Length: 177
Image (tube, rainbow, N blue to C red; front, side, top):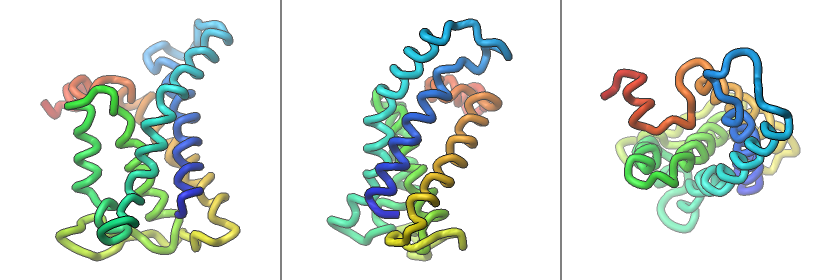
């Protein structure tokens, strides 16, 4: 995808994820908060998530200025670094979401994939669902991919572990530590 697609993806993710995180997955089937309280809580979450998710969604394309595009910053080692950020810097908890969804959008939404295992391998991985970044279908594909990403994030939040838990709490819940 192009820069516009990644900004759109990041903004929609921040909005959707803010709404997902506004509802406590342990609250049960009934929401006891008033609509105004829920809207305020969702608005705060969206504002809190917008900057880190959008910046994360744009970061991998910094490799257009140096290195090899879709290789240097579009790989699993870079994602692991961003995934580890919250362990060191608490305010960067959601940057990895933007980076990971950038990768998904480039693999699923565009004709050219990304080199997931770079620098060990330059092989680019993609799915046959992509369109050219200049295509009239680029934005509709971005909307569809983002909707699927939000469904997956919502399912994880409600059925696996709350995405707003700390990494150490999530690791304990998953039995990693």
